[in-house]
Length: 268
Image 1: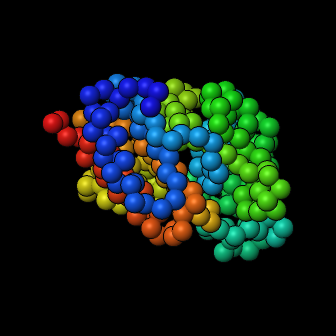
Image 2 (image 1 turned 135 degrees about the vertical axis):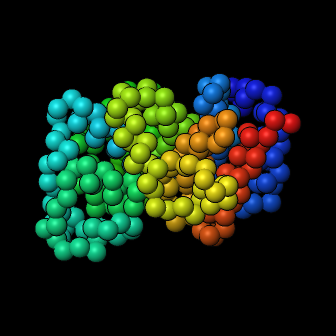
């Protein structure tokens, strides 16, 4: 814990430690208090990013749109050779289907569409996405391969990020300090339309807004987002690995999320 988290640090650390005591697998957590700008980290380190890397792809896409280098209304079509598995709408559609750049960004985030993501990587350039990651001062993150390229992953070309990097970017988005206030607001609105609600938001009280991005790989479950809790907005990033059971990992993330919410919104 490099940075103190106010008077709630001790309760937060104790509650999370108690919750994870008997849980299998490895969990890393970062909590960023958006009122005080203070950060609490638990086991933050570079890990397999899964779809959390798509946050950085979205940031570079909006940066290129802002710079006039990318037309958000430009149509991109996918070929049969672009078809990959995983989540998303496009894999159910015929080759030759096209969507605008902005629609592809939406699909990449809200449905974690891997065809949309790979089309955007090709259009934006992997080098430019990694330059954006460095510009955001994210030291643990790198895009090395396209989505569902398991041969590249097996050869050591794995995409990486950390809960600290992801929390840093989400906090910047909330404050309008990632790119600019207009683009950051648009990205937050896309995150709020996330369709996978089985992790961070699952156990939160009804009406609590969660703007988030999920990720999963065999043995790994992640979720990270901006939680607009009453009187205490915060960023929560949770990554896990070496999980024996995917459903159990999702449930644990949901329980961590509710635990963090309870600690941060309780004044005692």
